[in-house]
Image (cartoon, rainbow, N blue to C red; front, side, top):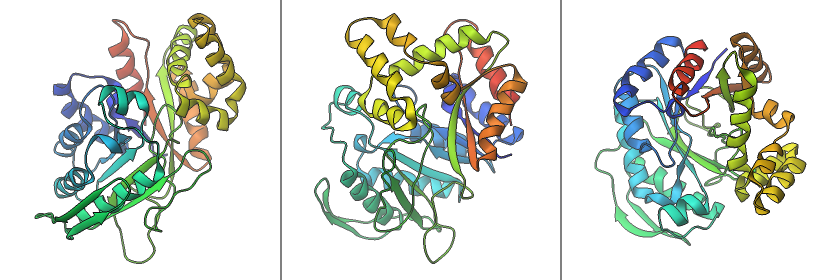
Length: 327
């Protein structure tokens, strides 16, 4: 079965990523997902992976659309299309007030209109067309990329939950991987593979991705406790809380946030139920994790292994163990 890997979750030193990328390719992972929050810069890391592999697909899951201009994203997508023809997909998300507003000091508006405008500009930029745009979020004129790739790029966007947003009247729902089961607001730019109606944007194939925070371990309960703490950090953020609620975990989300607002951090973590852990994680011996990952694949999605381990001296070995159990 095809399996993707959330490469940045391995938390390796940057100098070790070329070797890890080559190993992922040799092991048969289909796509390496490179995200961005407070760690490595995603475009640079994607370039590092691209230049040390030959067949591994590379995708961003995801980068905040607000933290760079659409022109810069268009240039980045075009450059990576030259370095890794047909292998790179640029994934953009609307992110959160914490990342955009607090960390970057930029205006934060969770508007799908901003995504639509950005993807339209990125598409035009990467195609080498002269770009002039007068929108709600972006106004620019007379830019033309000097080195457009041979393969034109296409873009699609998706909404949170059941909302399906199409950029430029084309494309389909796209779900780059996140701890939130890969269903955040996102836009993706990837190589077009033929004329006619645009198909769903995937680095390869039509299958959707579904993430699993995965830890191959013989000590299941301590790891699940650590995973509950990790998920709690997401559940107290409004965008993720809404998503979890839409997925059927409304009761748990309410319990977590009620306890958190009352200052009861321990109680908040206890609000993460067993069914939430089973729904978002795969923790246990290799056979158990492989069966859970396989169950995802049998539903028609491509599983994304997100290596997870509790923080501490043993974390690195645990992450690599999980990485090397698949695909």
